[in-house]
Length: 135
View 1 (cartoon, rainbow, N blue to C red):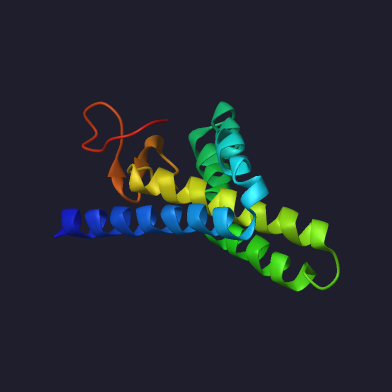
View 2: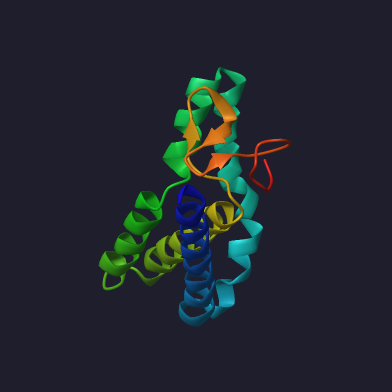
């Protein structure tokens, strides 16, 4: 049963990534490449692991969730009548961020638990962890 839930969450995350990609291509066609260019920038949040697994889990989890991309998307909507440049920047950021989180989750990289980078809410990742994917 737990594996069925993990599969459902991974498919759902893949759908979010696809929607974010379609949104950026549709709404900001001149800026679609930013989704790919910024992809690894969000993984800088892993630098917290230099300090400790608990700090790393916190910094990773702050960046690897859908709350902040949603806020950036809302900012894009609110800023539209005020500044097209700021609205576009916030919208592209929202799409790039949601795409990154969606791809990570679709690959099996979930929110980190404080004991180890390889221990996530989707299960263990890495060699012998039962999951798949990247660091």
